[in-house]
Length: 135
Image 1: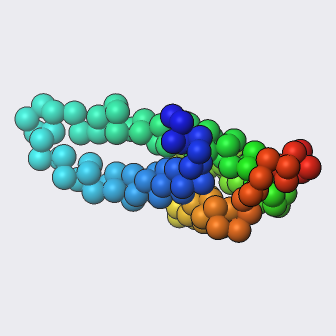
Image 2: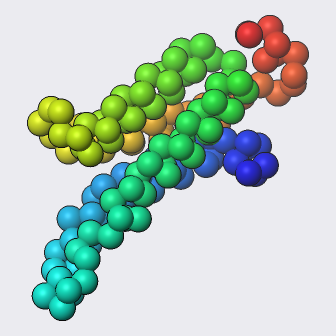
């Protein structure tokens, strides 16, 4: 957990990319597991269906920590806006409130990962004083 707090942008980017990979791979995993369904196995296991919630929790912690250490107010807002958008898209996927194209989720996840990488490279406070001034 300490590593997540210290390297929040790195973990946030990784979580976003893994979330994207999870979304992309799910149809292929389901098709691959169709052969096992004939023998009575569950096609889409509960843990696989809800793995995206683990990613969104890790992403929340990463964004919370990243925004504490960022000196760019625009990036702080962009990170939170994209996190809420991704959270909404994941909830929408589970509850099917609206029919939305899957590509929107990929774009938001990729944008979130890109923002973490940008924040990691260009917007970090080098001392405690700069973060205190921004707050």
